[in-house]
Length: 254
Image 1 (cartoon, rainbow, N blue to C red):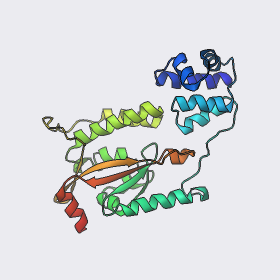
Image 2: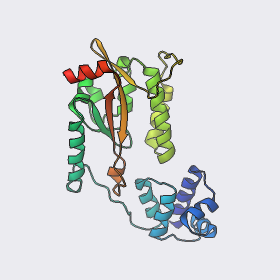
Image 3: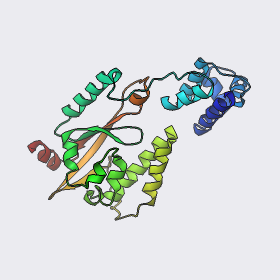
Image 4: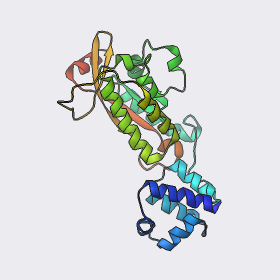
């Protein structure tokens, strides 16, 4: 058990490109103690596991795994979003999505599965095949599927490159195998056309054809600050804003 916990901590230390000395200095413990924990010679306390995980920025779900491997109970609870303890969170999410209208917004989990969305977002999905909209709907797959949104995205190569870069950053931070699978899928998809590179925008827009119009969006990502619950720590709110006056006018007109 203790050795398994040490192995997990060592793996996270390597992922963060830290030496035992650097981790020890950050956690204010001796390098010898870090070595003993990693090799299983010392069983870390709950406090020590959490201290090391904090310095290694280990996600809450994986912190629980380290604690279990060390023979301790998980420190971070996990609930379904529709369970009573999450009522205030759900209400906050609903309020944020509604307040963002008439612009599209959605909530995704750590796997980029759709958790919730407002009516403006669902309006952009009109006409897609029913099988693509059956839960769980993965937003990344939906975006690049040849029978999904891909044919409607005017700058598909640019948007897909943006998604790949973002997924790589998230995978580097979390080591999530589902994100690794998504990266593999995106890498295997054929290229369509290459957008001109002479003038790269400050923000990568999503240029989506809707009927006879092309809507252009930029997005922001919002997460909950200092979460101590697993589900909450893995939620992200993606809010889309008009990237030009034409898109703004079309959406405001309804």
